[in-house]
Amino acid sequence: MHEIVIISGKGGAGKTTITGAFAQLAENSILCDLDVDAPDLHLLMDPEHLLESEFRSGNEAIIDPDRCTNCGICADLCRFDAIEQTDDGFQVAPFRCEGCKVCVEFCPAHAIDFPERHCGEWYFSKTRFGTMIHAQLFPGQENSGRLVTLLRQEARKVAEAQGSNIILCDGAPGIGCPVISSLAGTTLAVLVTEPTPSGMHDLERVAELCGFFKTKVAVLINKWDINTEFTEKIEAYCKDKGFTVLCRFPYDRAMTDSMINKQVITEYENGPLKKTLKKAWADTLALLEDL
Amino acid sequence: MIYAIASGKGGTGKTTITASLVSLWDTPVMAMDLDVEEPNLHLFLKPDINKINKAYIPVPEVDESKCTLCKACSELCQFKAITVMADTLLTFPEMCHGCGGCIEICPENALKETNRELGEICHGSAKETEFIMGKLRIGEAMSPPLMEQVKKNLKREARPEDVIIDAPPGVSCPAVSAVIDADCIVLVTEPTPFGLHDFKLAWEAFSPFGKPMGAVINRAGIGDDSVQLFCRQNGIPIWAEIPYDRTIAEAYSQGEIVVQSVKTLRTTFESLMDKMRAAVSEVSHA
Image (tube, rainbow over all chains, first blue to last red):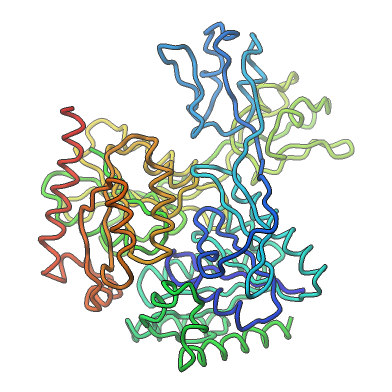
């Protein structure tokens, strides 16, 4: 079974558009949206939720004012400045609480409760391209890495049950917690970039991260015609690093228009863009054969 | 005043707008890049970096001669960063959140603090503007603790009157950490279904903080008018609309500050600057 994750370092490079196109071209794949913070793949897939589950992870400290003696030990020990002294006594700022339990443990009055955190929802859904596993983290929540790990486990179970050998994952921007969780044990990372200073800078950082996980890397250059000189620079960099460049994809309004139509780009356009992506997908599959 | 330039969706133009605002700002200002995972502001402001400090998070180190394997530390740790395996106490520093609980609870004083590197904090200046950027070490999972250390510069005495923050994308903990200390939030989006969806998420996430907030619609004209409609229905002021224009995209791809290269944008950005200032002063006079 192969897991392909589409990431970019930089946001807005075109991850979801490319994931959507590959989902159509792959035919029998399981889809997974690992951008649990600001997911967008469902906007193209129009998923029907067959199963909805709560995602609970970690705990949060809550001070019971009736039991609190205002000794302030909790505030002294908290390394996250999450405990504030207010006119109503000590209170925990939920957005700052790390869930470390230190205040709970050391409160001499046992005045701090530590309930589990309900951080989001995750879904098992049906789409026109097959099963999709996705989620929505509640705003400001942590533990996106744990949710990414959970979605990947579920996607693998589904792939096994349905006899699918490809899991296609839309990843998160950046190089932090959720991206790290999406890389461990993944077969191939498709890095979507654009020919701009930010695109190049962020590509280099995310590619280095993939190197730590020994994840094979392929690169797709989106909006290549915005700056052809930079595109050549990126291609030279890829050649130097031994990364396959899957394709140069042009800037095209079809990208936005297909999104507005709730279609993946290869459904919306049946001409040169589809042809380019078809070849990119075939080359992606060829890379998997070598693994 | 502290202004945070944020967005739910990545790639909508936060850095473009931050760089342009900084270059136009006519009073002392500090530019702060809090997108520590993928900082890009320096690629446009091109500051001279004159100081780079490493940032660390405290993690435990075991003195095996003192440890009695009582497990008080591993039972307290919520992050699986310290555990007893057979007859050894093992630490997993990369899992540690630096809460210090294990050290505090150890009855034998067998644990002491050592450091894990989070990344770098770079200080410099771009023309008259003070510049600060956090840069996460590649492989480090936790960006908020590095952001907290960069943000200490907000509390510094004798800092420039205004600060413009380039925030990370999204609405989870790093994004919240970037906007929570701001006096005003500028939400950048684009008029597409993805832009609208993530704009709504950001609006819902940041509204409870009760800070003045306005929208900037970048690449206006490429999609539909659903963002404008949403703003109207929810009483969100639109502080600027930047039209889609290939010359802007090309200037950006050359590493240029678009308001400096594309002259027609100047009035748009000046009016954005005025609206940001007015929004903050309305609150402080209310």
